[in-house]
Length: 290
Image (cartoon, rainbow, N blue to C red; front, side, top):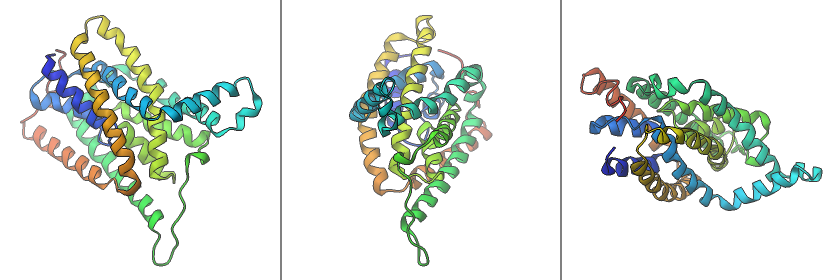
């Protein structure tokens, strides 16, 4: 991997990680369109450490508060009813599905799941799911001529059951094209949570999963499967761009619809099917490691 490739891929990772359009799909597609080798699941996992570092800084007050309350609840029973202490446990519970499935399907994630036809399918299908979830949220917020607006749930109403459902939605993002934020936010909206609550829990839930995945994949870098210099460079690029994107996105979702992302996903998926069907792109374009 060249330094220019790492710069472009780090930029793509930072721009797409927090948007509901799938960073892993865009890294894969960027390599395919440019004629580069597929950066691979290991590169994706390691550069995601950069974007998760942006989450740690952006949500630092929330994280410190949650970790502090959770730690105290381990020895102080009176703290176990505290919302922040409960959030600590819910993040742990919600991380279980992706941890189990990530290890179980590791070979598929690094191989068959990176087929461009599968990516095109997940882009379209999850785009439709996000669109439906967004419309339901908008209907509840706006109400109608014959009904009042419906109050949606906040994170204070999050329980173990919903936490596990969020976690299962996050686990779907192991397939490129699904999108971690897109799947968890869609799940949250369908369960009746506000856009802000679904997005905030989505980002908090991603921290242990992404950091664990990145650390796990570091062994591939050590074995020579990933170029150290370019990968670290891309990780720093992803961090800087990712922080700017998350700050913008958290403001965007308070007043705007997810429909622009829905339309983008569907158009990109259809375009990808056309290019593969016409023979312009091979479904396995750039798959061999470089």
